[in-house]
Image 1 (cartoon, protein in one colour):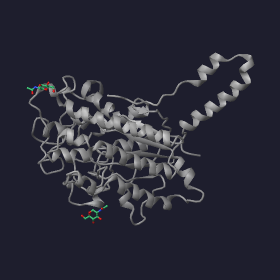
Image 2 (cartoon, rainbow, N blue to C red):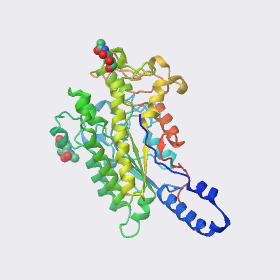
Image 3 (cartoon, rainbow, N blue to C red):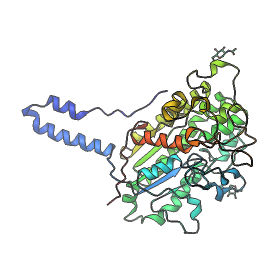
Image 4 (cartoon, rainbow, N blue to C red):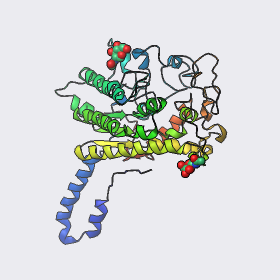
Length: 396
Ligand SMILES: *[C@@H]1O[C@H](CO)[C@@H](O)[C@H](O)[C@H]1NC(C)=O
Ligand SMILES: *[C@@H]1O[C@H](CO)[C@@H](O)[C@H](O)[C@H]1NC(C)=O
């Protein structure tokens, strides 16, 4: 798939190779201007004082409970949470999520769900999580216009941005603090949008029909990015979607009789992976346009697609046995240990006992082990465009 990486020609090297004593003064001036511009476009953040995240079940650390009690009820039972927290926390995983590793990587506490703090009991100065499991990028009414009815929550990205706007005045003073505060905060916007596609596919829409949603979904994500930048955000990480064709639930629900629909190396469904790549390339076009509009902001694309795909292509490199790489750790039945009518968290649906050797936890979400590998790669710069430095140094 196409990876759009912001070009950063090395002006320094060009200038130095041209340098002659006669030009030295003007070059020095140019040099410092260029360096200043580069610094402006790609700031070297030494510390982040806060982390704010938006998204769906890949990122929710417990908001869902406060929205609708009867959806995904199973996530409030063990074995959810068995690995790290040893209790269910509302995370759709056996343990920590990518966002938890982001927080830890920045030396910050793991994010509290925003909706847990309605009564002022929770301190959000170091960040908050607005993601809700099942959330869509588009509003329920826009999805309804597109013929998508059955959503598992009515929360969309727009609600999450509004919640952030509501919270902001209580964590920084608009007259003097907010500018600096926002500058030093990191914003994780997504992954989001995959549910919009998933609900539509589940209701019988074809991949080609769902492709038509992509522009609106990218626009919605970019509106959120823009809203945050206008409030002063300077570091935004925008993840694309994961390789959907490798995911247990989609492999189970959309099996193909045609063996050429499966990638021989990864075992993933090619049409769904191509669709995910299509979304990601449009998302990167959107990000590129935002960078032009707001050169003061550092908008980073996180390539979740490639970060996850390597687990399916070369599972042994990450300690995942090849024969169970698509199988849910917690689940029963079907070719991939996943049955949508008997899912993890329901009575008598067991965990595999060794989630560290699995990529997929419950058929829909990655294990802590997979999330940890993804974050490790991201923080070493491998799948972030442009790269950023993670520093655990506390802010002075
Ligand atoms: C979601 O729906 C519930 C009722 O089902 C309603 O009370 C709530 O206000 C809605 N939330 C949003 C954000 O629209
Ligand atoms: C299987 O899929 C390939 C690639 O999409 C296609 O060219 C071929 O005609 C399909 N075969 C059958 C039997 O449908």
